[in-house]
Amino acid sequence: MSLKFIIKIVCSLGVLTALFFFVDLEEFSRAITAFSGLVITGSFLINLAGAVGANSAQIYIHVRNAVKGVSRWKLFVAILETDFIVRFYSLMLPLGATAGIRWHRFNTIGIGVLNSGAAIVVNKLQQIFLALLFASIAFGLGAMSAVPSNASRLLALGAGLGAALIFAVLSGFFVRGGYSGLLSYLTSKLTSSTRVRKRWDLSTKLASYMQSYRLATEEVRKVDLALVLIWGVASFILVAWSQALIIWALGIDLDFLDILFVRGVVMLAMMVPFSIAGIGFRELGTVGSLALYGVSKDIGLVVGVVLFGFQLLISIMGGVFELGHIFRGRRI
Image 1 (cartoon, rainbow, N blue to C red):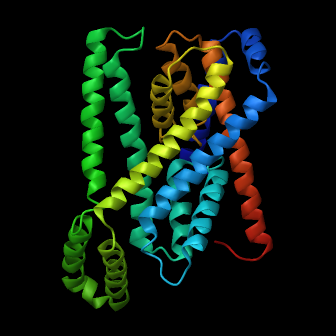
Image 2: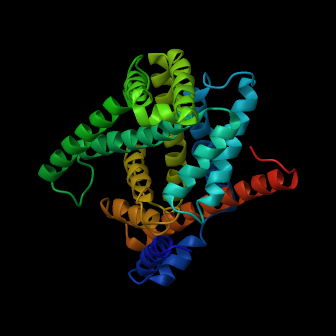
Image 3: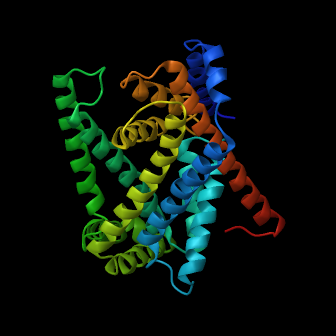
């Protein structure tokens, strides 16, 4: 076990443990046992549909032209299973390692080296774009009682500019000759160098990877960017709706737009690189974002812990899928 991995575990568990020192444990226990089974079940199923189902659909839209000889349905199921399995490994490994697992599994499906990498980057970029977009809207409306109006306007402007920048970067994957053209230029420079030309196997691989990516991106249309964002929005809204059911069940009166902002903050907090599966930072993001609306730390932590419980259940489902592949002697 590397020192970096140990540090990530310590950071995650340290932040989570520290949060419990600042809450009323009696109030926390009372709130977390007050949910009905119907609310928890409904919220979990909606979370599952958004976090895994719609998210996998977004990835599928981007890479469906990169795989030949496989039915579209089988490709989607393979991507869906990969999403489950990656969430299982995310409980034990940092963000970079789980991205590597996803990349490897996408390669075994037949998506291709560059297309797999692009799919992972696009998935993260659209998540960050939506988080910043809804943050800009929420701050622009000035609904947070704890944030002065001048600060809200500045935050709205900053988040809006960030969203615009991410959208510009995201668009490059869906414009003919965008990143494909740039990679073609870099590949030609590499393969023409004396050192690479002496390595026939390396130059052949580079050319093969680039050809595969170029052929896949030739079929990508600008409308695919809209479809990716539509499925990304569907994923974002479904998970936010799942959070909303938990928040409303605790008697917190928040508009759904405000809950979209909370969802965005939690998503960004979970991307903190020095954590394992966002543990601790998810809860911190939930407590902090809800505090802007005057919600107590006790109730905010309850929401965060319930959401972690959902992630744990989804990860266990991923572990079952992985065990199934191991027992059958094959992987995705």
